[in-house]
Length: 372
Image (cartoon, rainbow, N blue to C red; front, side, top):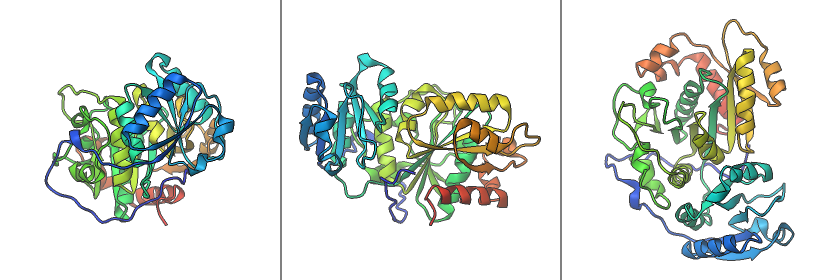
């Protein structure tokens, strides 16, 4: 898995005070490398780096960028660049404009960029992100789960992995990535613990202070969670820059971040790009396996492995599915009776304490480098 993010060892620091994230802006600086021959993007990047208090070195192409790439705190590449070094240590952020549309994400996937910043809309987020790039602690690991088809059980697996990580003393955050899923919080608790939900971050501008972010979230099962509200009231979806700010704060606040990505296009263009590793979950049947192949084609260039949900009878062998998708087989999510009812009643964590679930979760966490 991607090793650019180290785990931190901190004790819990929960408080009862809940604060709004609108003005949680830390300070900092960094050495930034810009690779572009596009004068407009260079002008925008120069302004943004200056706002971040950083030091910019601009070069027109990859040949000039090779020297010093891995000595920079962050690397920005313009949408005119069509390749980047394959064995780099410093991640790259692709810069483009809104007029380029979805083509930006396709280009980022093709060249292997780690993030996308659409300018000028993402200028505020990017400035704050760059101001944090020189931090000596790059933060925790982000593990994303996505179902290859509806009903694959990605949410259940994500909850159990977060629960298991927390039980090992890892400071853990579970993120609900599906605004249309009815609210992940309804599966983990029958109560309404105090804390912020996704709509509270709608007005976020710039970066979020990690300590305040950590202390603002609700807790269940020993882990913090960020959920869509489990109510019928309409919700407002945060802008991509606000989502990026949340993910930055999550990485810097927690040792492990487990993201139930959902299968919407917005989630695939935002949350999936923040993951260090992805787990694609499917059922052992032909139709779900075909659907999983289509989802796989939409994922960013992130290290991805396969989980298969145990079920009887299985129409296809798990290793056959993994081979057909070209993914390593990481594990089997156990089939536990009563999952649907427990999810409806907010009791999914009770099932997470069963031996088959503990064995599954422990193996997956260990293989992803989250357990010693």
